[in-house]
Image (cartoon, rainbow, N blue to C red; front, side, top):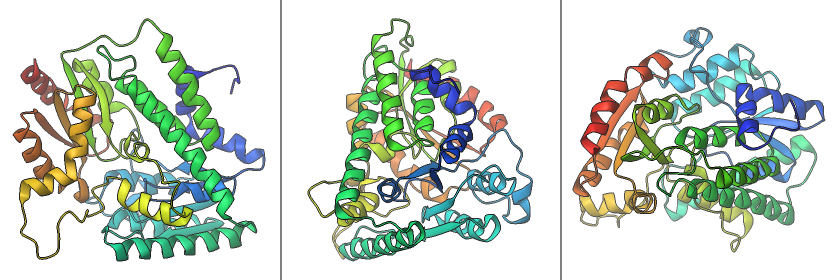
Length: 389
């Protein structure tokens, strides 16, 4: 690795082999813990000087090893994650820090413990509702995770060092929002592909190193004169996890600007800060349960026994996307769902109803986490872009 590469060139370098920087850090004595999806509370790792590393699949590697353990009719991304683990790609990880994202995600956590035998493993059974009792339960689960981490490292997570970690992660969240602000203009200053590459690069770095990289990218992109060309279609992509830019690249090559996303590897974990007013553990319990607008959590949107108003319920759940649409001048929505991803699939009819009422064109696409199936979507994307103009 050349220490001289900065900004977007550093982003591309990191993404060519995400494990390389993690292995370098490990050789310098750092502990590296793998995590999956957005629910694990990364601030707790940062407070102990552990590097959080997002475990991903590989869309270009055929799943072979995982076939013995998981049927083909479950999430292809999670099957690929297990496959990569079984093939030894993550042999450098010192630990696994998992939380409940979905039913298959839970199975992966337990399989990882059994078959990869990490030195450290902890699983947070994150609740699925936002009732007051669920927040209390979540806080207790985080206390449990805290004591397990402390026992393993021999270090204490204190109020002050947890607050300091929250500040570091909130600083990074603010920089991510600043990065996404660069695609508000017409033409956008940064492409959707560059956005997603930058976000992916962050997920294998210590938080401060990631923030430094963000500052470099923001500075470079703000000054350059050769940014993306403006296109008639300005799109929001909502959906399942995207751990590569294949779909975004296809959409942009077909003739659109992807100006904002709402996905787990993109903007979703960064658009709200952890409260610094509440006690740190309570603030983290609330943030990771309520603030992360993930379909895996059922938002409590109406009183029990209250009369159900479908459109009011949809507004409660999806109005934040309407705010994105206004701020980024979006004129089309692509709902991207991995095959067999039930939690995202169940949201699609509601999202469609909500945005058709707002007269925003919506395209639903499903793929099985392979470059071949994403390529097959080109004709449908082209047809959709013609509707927008």
